[in-house]
Image: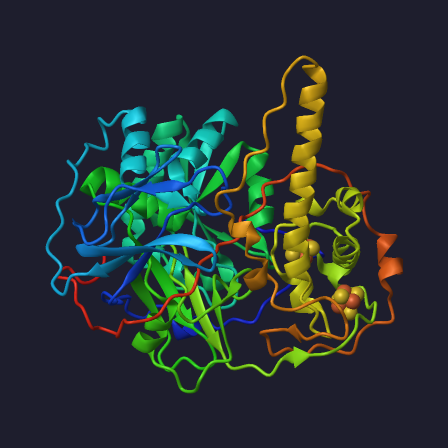
Length: 507
Ligand code: SF4
Ligand code: SF4
């Protein structure tokens, strides 16, 4: 598959440091922080089902969400406390020194398993995709009449190789997960998609399904989705599909994630199997540091967020990065227009940032801010290092809120006798974590951070205004934006390799 686009960018690659290297287990840290929330959901709090000092076994339910989804324990452990980290509630577990072999759920026959059994097992095993329960994602696809599913192993950013390594080491299990997901929604299994730049040494097909190489600029995923949508196809995250395979075929809970640990001060970059809730600094202890980092990123280099060294790794996190960088700049926008020229969604990031700062929220709708995918291209190409993506992501949330309010107002107009419901108070909000999501300001006199060493040519004389003439008219169409991950701070106690699981790496 080839994606031809004038927009987007070619990124440098630091993948060879972790590609085709042995995948290891990170071991068990001295504490785990289990999130009692689902990212971005304010009306679905998780009520713990365990009490302080009680003992839990691996895969045991430790909390139940309002929606019925469950939080499960990644280890044999003692429940210590419920603590807020970064304003969000976590259940703190202290894993046992010796981990016992867990009791799996009964294995199901992949040929005989019923659709509803796949949904139920995905929920029981707490399988998530992009921070949401996988069952909800599949349900959405079913309602949209998706007829073909593909494994998303695209990995098109600078550092992450986790999905590629999943394909290399667990390809048949990924295909098994894909077939189960397809069966659950009455769709076909299409195959596996990878970036052509990372495809060296990978098979042409796995268990009868093609491994399709995608050639094009970053961000590939959104363009691929558009292309697949023409034939009612969709993508599903490789990690989620592996979780589904293990839940149905092996009866395991989804409690581990494969994380690429890298950065310009990491001594031995690695791909590590990490238990959900592991503090991020534990991973850098395992891989070693050549010097003290000035910043950490959880999530990839283009779309990840600045993290505290003690933030817990969430399920689905596939990259943890540490950098020593002096790319802190104090420069104003020079109106070069590059961010507008390269935005794959044909937006005006500067205008969106300005409207947000000026609280001109209607203007955000006119600028179609909801179409921003948070890909990070605008920040990356800015020659003076302005981090526009921080603003555009915030603008997406603001614009969505506005759209929801408008929809609610319209619905109330249609029901003149209806008593308006009291506005529910947000219980939790990952979106409220603007302190972490926006460490810098767009104001020219304040600092802006860029993580990349770029050698861009001098800015063109083209202005943002000139570029506007080439843009399509904005609309207020809603799109599927990624919800940002969030996590919090807590004190580290873990030491690399301090506690060993009996099983070692995920099998
Ligand atoms: S982050 Fe949003 S505004 Fe910036 S380039 Fe990507 S889609 Fe465009
Ligand atoms: S890339 Fe955008 S924000 Fe950066 S200087 Fe050019 S016009 Fe301004």
